[in-house]
Length: 419
Ligand code: 2PG
Ligand code: MG
Image (cartoon, rainbow, N blue to C red; front, side, top):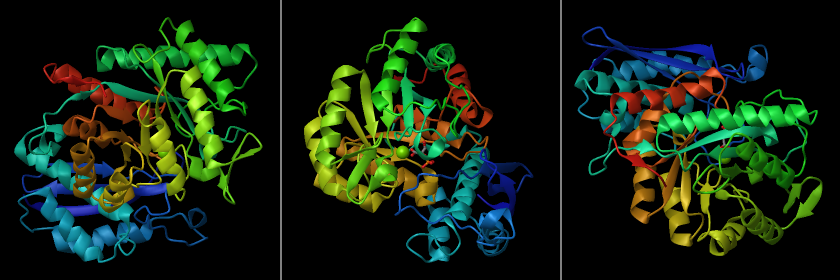
């Protein structure tokens, strides 16, 4: 596969911050695009998102240097070269950058190029992206766990809620289309409930409501009611709940600060045990902070049999860190975000390691998004069964659910995988 042009533009993401839009042209004139996502609650060991730091533009958040790298050095290296596989493109990018964290060219530059070129391979082969991304030996599948983030806190919303994401997962839905319907119906029921109690129903960065409720248990109680109001059963066979407290964000001086209370790792574990007892929570992401590996080991030992424990900030989609965590019994599932590692190939490698260890994987958007629905295809290709893409509302969030609905409609024979 050869490309004849490669270029990037500085465009805005869903938060109104600059990001990259990458375009490549194939030899027959067809073009492919990719939009680069951007996080707010980032892990410290993520690949480096290159920002200009020029206070005169976008308060320093411009990405013109990353854009320049795509249009210059990266285009020079890739345009006209004949690549047999995406792995060859990605290893070229990794070598060209030359740093362990992609800090020279910027992981925002490399991931945009890698995603665009993944699409170029699919277009050239005349197959959908998900088929072209499917690793050898994997049977692609529609994800049976769509995690809709219906209530936002933490750094994604300006309320007093410390936990970042309260997601509903219609695990009992028989199809993507029915899961989307359940997600939207519960979202609407939750809006009615919150409005009825006098809460504002404005939304956070991922489209979930952002009422000023401080205690996570109080939010969970509202969610359970909203699920029932919408006519579903709040359970692991009906509509269940997934949490991402994003605990690194409220870990201060060795304590977790939740609704004004200072808690130890063991207090947090006990609190989660109670939460799992009282509410239909099936998945808990970043329950403890990225640096608290001892706490994570105790959390995994205590709750790992009862609930999915997803590592995000602690693992950052990094194959080396995931391998270490697997060997140390830290978490039992990984969140998968392309821009945390910076190429599609390394992302697939992280997923392969998880599969081989019997770990689940949840493919994820970022809180800053574009309309690009790449992650929907990735979830199908990897057959991981799980995806989170924010609320069942707002264009940049629903683009991913819409893509899954489209894949389901065009390929009804694809197996439907529940975690
Ligand atoms: C997370 C993500 C996505 P961010 O913590 O899982 O929901 O947030 O992109 O801000 O890191
Ligand atoms: Mg997270």
